[in-house]
Image 1: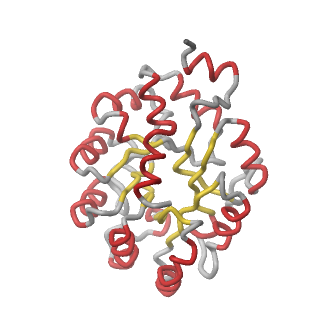
Image 2: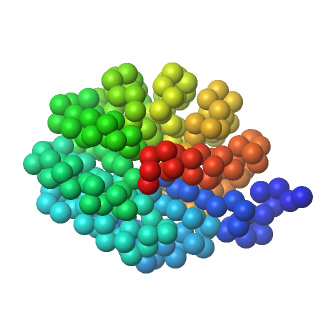
Length: 266
C-alpha cells in the first residue's frame, strides 16, 4: 500500500485524502500583491491542490463597514461545494454587528461561524464590543476563528483562556495557535474541549506540528493556510513531510474538519 507521501508526490489531488482548509481569505489587500485573489482563480488552484473545501473570510468583511460580507455571500453561493465563509466581525462598527446577527439565519447556507481579527482592529476579543457575537455563537453552537498571537494585547493566550472559561458551547479555532507560545496553546486545547489548534503560519517552525500531535493529539488540529497569502503545495508538503503517521495526517487534512462541520451544522 502506498503512503500518503507517495500519493501526494504522484498527484497533489489525492482522491482518498481530501483537504479541508479551515483558515483562508479572499480578495485584494492593501500593500500586498496576490497573483490569485479572485474567486474563480482561487477555486481552480484549490481543485488542483486537492482542496475539497475552504472556510474563508473575505478581506472586505474585516476591514470596512457596510455590506462587507457581501463578498463572502456571493463567493459561497457561486461555489457552494467548494466554499464556506466566516462572517467577518469588525468591532469598530457595532451597528453593523447588530444587523449582521439579526440577519444571520438568512445565510445559514453560507456561513460556518465568525472570524475575529482583533490585533488589526486594536480591540481585545474580551472587549464588550465583541460580546454580542460571542453570545450568539455560543447560543447556536457555531465556530469562531480568532486570529491569535503569543502575548498579543488583543488576542493572546490569556484572552483565549478568558473566552473559553466563559463560553463553553462555541467551537473556537485558535488561528495561528497563539504563535510562538506553543506550550500555552497546547495547554488551552488540553483544558477546553471546544478549542482547536490551527496550523496557519505554524508550519514555518520546524517541529511544532510534531509537538502538537504528541502533546495535544492529532484530533485537536485543523489544517489552515491563510490562502491566498500562502501556497497550498508548500503547506500540504509541510504536513506530508512531518514526522507523524498517515493516520494523523488524515485527521488533520480532513477527518477533524468533517466532524466539526457536522457539529456546527454547516
